[in-house]
Amino acid sequence: MAVLITGGAGFIGSHTAIELINSGKEIIIVDNLCNSNINTIENIKKITNTNSIPFFEYDCCCKKNLTKIFEENEIESVIHFAGLKAVGESVEKPLKYYSNNLKSTLTLCEVMSKFNCNKLVFSSSATVYGSPKTVPIKENFPTSTTNPYGTTKLMIENILKDICLANPDFSVACLRYFNPIGAHRSGLIGEIPNGIPNNLMPYITQVAVGKLKILSVFGNDYPTHDGTGVRDYIHVVDLAKGHLNALKYIENHNGFETFNLGTGVGYSVLDIIKAFEQVNNIKIPYKIVQRRPGDIAECYADPTKSQKLLNWKATLSLEDMCHDSWNFAKLAFN
Ligand code: NAD
Ligand code: UFG
Image (tube, rainbow, N blue to C red; front, top):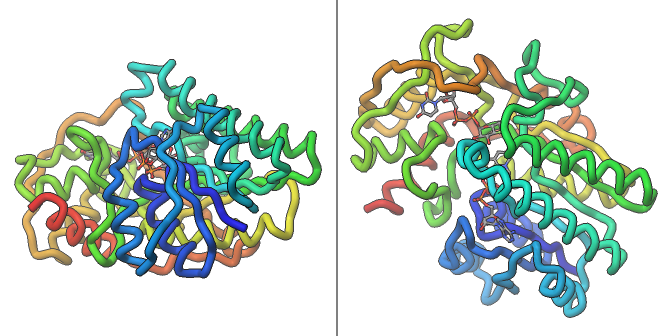
């Protein structure tokens, strides 16, 4: 029996694949490589010392191809990472996002139902909390969204909730990720965004490597300890491990459940710059510019529910995140 990983060639999916293999699970990866590279599959093999990993270069929106995977393999559960995730692009091209993210999930759920596969872990996002009134954020806080990407996540959460209501055998762990950064210790896999990065850590590493000149810090007049935005950065390996705990949870619990995957600690933009500089002994030139539209002052998790129900806790430090992000970037760009 195998775990199907959709989007398994991507940033979080590839790290999760490694943790699953290391825990003795059989895995199958499906990814259309629209935001990833086939080399990642080779690197997963290298890191885990595995000869072969079943990989299908299919689009999850294609029912025929997904059906083929389920026909030819015994799949016990699915971790659904496949999706488009660039917030800015989703505002410019909403149809692309609604079409890809919704269609792939609906198709996957239809095929799972047909083959009586009832266990799903879904990649949601802290973006579904919109602008929270208070922090830390608990799972029962109100949800809202500010961009099409976030709306696809919330719509999918609601779809999955309805499927669980209609089918009492179905179980979904909906994982709301905070800000994943870092990379595998080997430096072989990590995140290389297309074009100029939107997210903080990929921008910092590209400044460090000399590809970009200077980091723009978006606003220093937020009501935070140093005026810059505060987020809950989590090492991608900690995040990946959370999926194993979520799989274990849905083996024994039916129904729909949401979980925050964050550390519970918020760091500001300046904290991150300072930590990166200290850990890696590299200066990151930066300038303060206007706030970025749509950004909120503070966003960090209350991870108590995940600690209690999933028996999961992030253990890697900000220093680990800064070290591993740089270790990957310098190998990837040099
Ligand atoms: P990623 O882009 O690195 O990985 C997603 C993978 O899905 C890519 O390899 C892409 O090629 C694949 N994919 C996209 N659409 C597909 C389709 N229709 N069929 C098959 N493959 C498809 O992104 P990631 O950072 O690894 O994120 C994984 C999931 O987690 C996404 O759903 C994302 O929205 C969610 N998430 C990410 C973050 C983050 O900051 N990275 C935060 C919250 C939630
Ligand atoms: N920032 C800068 N300069 C940059 C990039 C970011 O100052 O060049 C700041 C932002 O203003 C923010 C912080 O760094 O205060 C983090 O920004 P990111 O873009 O790295 O992350 P966000 O919190 O804005 O968003 C990320 C993902 C979303 C996801 C959200 C919550 O991009 O998809 O985390 O999980 F929804």
